[in-house]
Image (tube, rainbow, N blue to C red; front, side, top):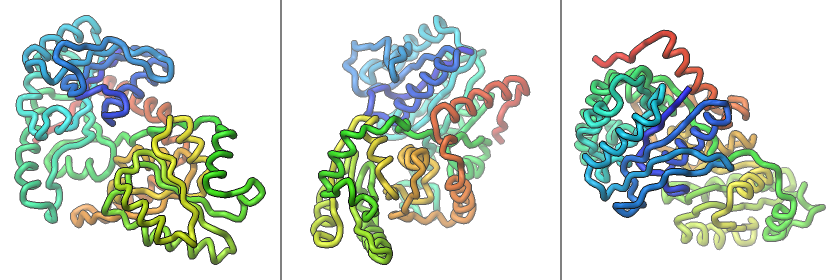
Length: 380
């Protein structure tokens, strides 16, 4: 099978949807299929720059990166030429409105893509859809959302996709509310499970002041990624400190990844100075992130529980068999009960079901079944 992904950007490490398309493509290739990618609005390239090959874990992937500085008509022409040469069996649009247009209003996207995808079975993956999804949303978000909904519905009408997916139950419900029928294809972990680097692990314990024979006397928790202002890390750390104390253990906290609000980290460190041991490892390569996750007893999620299904970091924690502690909550009253039930399901999934290989196989099965049944999602 030949699959061509279309996404906004392919700047490695700077665009989550592009990273997703690249990793999915490499899994397709490993499974014996052919995969290529077009980045249609790459803001990280100069106008005349293009890139033809990218790599994921040693595998070469044919790509076409088109700068956002080129005219839209020129990009569509170049993309059309690439599609004709690739002759894909499927085109998979990885949709996120702000990726295709900086204000999140990609008017005409569906019509433009129809010109270059006509006759080829199409799939749409809604990574994001529109803002203003709840009655609690600010008026500005509701206004933007009004136009973003029109754009999404028009795109579905124009492309007439054979299959539509999204990453989580919340988005599925929101799409259904606007008569767009989608299946859930859960995200895979953005960090592979890799062999533990023993030497690096020892250096982490050294930063925490934990001697090898003392490890069993500690509960080690960690947060991977950004420290969002809305996260109630203070309460989470206090609760975990008291829980560790109750069983005669000490608490250690590791921050790793792009921490973001460093002042929040320093404030927490000062507040728990005599109670909790802290270490900030900063950004790390994937293999070392996996090692740190294997050192943890529990992981803290900076993502609100309602949005677990759209978090690659949450998927990484589950792949690494970690108990996930919630530090943020964002009520969506129209959908809270259904999301809660779905999150219970996510928490019980087998760790291997969060792997790239498992999710890519699920995606391939969906494509095959969709082809055999020749079903088309209905938009009313």
